[in-house]
Length: 118
Length: 141
Image 1 (cartoon, each protein chain N blue to C red):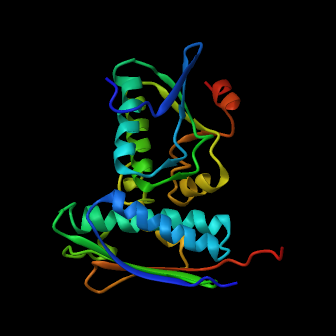
Image 2 (image 1 turned 90 degrees about the vertical axis):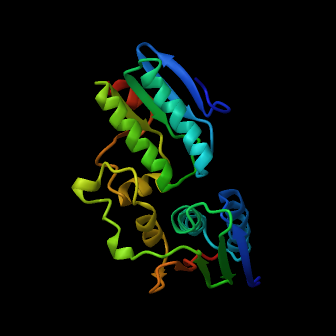
């Protein structure tokens, strides 16, 4: 299942899946829905358990996007997998800190450090 | 040089229309020398306020409109967003940073607006919000 244009660049490193956001702005509701479906598909359809989300392209994200990430984290945990977030620019990291989500997610500074942390 | 701008506009309950207004306000901020950080915060706050009005206020009802009155000059931004919904009381929204709410996917928009704006004020009827952002000091060029 793929709804709409691909919003994630997927790369496999061993048994780890790196999903890199394509969009600079994760704001629009429809877009967030598509991204959510593609993220959830990694777990539900492809059965991936070790997932890194790379935010290096992302310049803006809304609270609706945060909601989707929370759902993704729950889904991965329910499947006994691990989700890591990485390469988040300082302004976006502040959004995670304000909402205390930096305590909930495993956030790593770079893709390399995220890969090493599994 | 100040490029003060003010506009009143009513849009349908459609987030794409909201995005157009957002871009106009962002352009005005940039023209008036607001910093990248101010613009970042304004974009987030505007997105949250307009989407809240369209989704939660008007319930995506195509017969209802969102009224936006914005003003930007070299010292501050003021944006009033009013929907045609029943309104809500901001105190009734649960704190998303409480441990029991941390995993809930909703409720972070108002918190982000308050974090990035100088002032966020809801009308007593709860269907209108005013966002104010005083321009941060920019180092002399």
